[in-house]
Image (cartoon, rainbow, N blue to C red):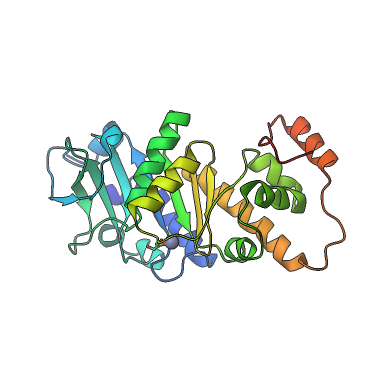
Length: 270
Ligand code: 2HA
Ligand code: ZN
């Protein structure tokens, strides 16, 4: 007898995260998407792993993820609605042996499909798994102040990282590895997926200019916390822009890094 998947920790976690993000104003309408790698053993408690509801071509090659099981938000679905109807708004897919087909194991019971940003998600998972074998979650969101700050800063990831670190002492501690920045690109494409994944080889955070942010990490809390800290800092930056009297000096930033045992991204501090 399989257990009820609506009580599975990974579904509950996804519902809570997306509801929080919606209420924070980060994910208007169908904005944002999340994907989480699942272990076969944890999913098998709830689903018959041999039963594929349907197959959906992905349109790109994700060979390194063959056989991996992924919980992911659906295209056109609203974060606002996930909590009240997970089975319609989420899906669990497994990457088939050809590397280019998703086998639907659960969800999208209205014939829906995975997020349009699947290339960026899967390619980012590949990059992050190479950097950290405990990596599991990729989160994309449209937090307001992050987008605003990005619009008033040069497209220069070291400069952007420095301004974040200078505005809030938490920032260098939470993301010493910095924030990557991509120029404005057409979203939903394999090209933006490849560009994001390239940044994800060294960053856990990547800003998409005039669009939003990607975060990656070992669990939902880590990734949520990363994006939350960037957004909070961007809010401080925007609220003080043009009036700033005190920014955190490089000397203090070096001191914070030493105190908290983190290594700041090379080339940002003097
Ligand atoms: O699907 O956020 O980037 C909604 C998006 C696309
Ligand atoms: Zn988006």
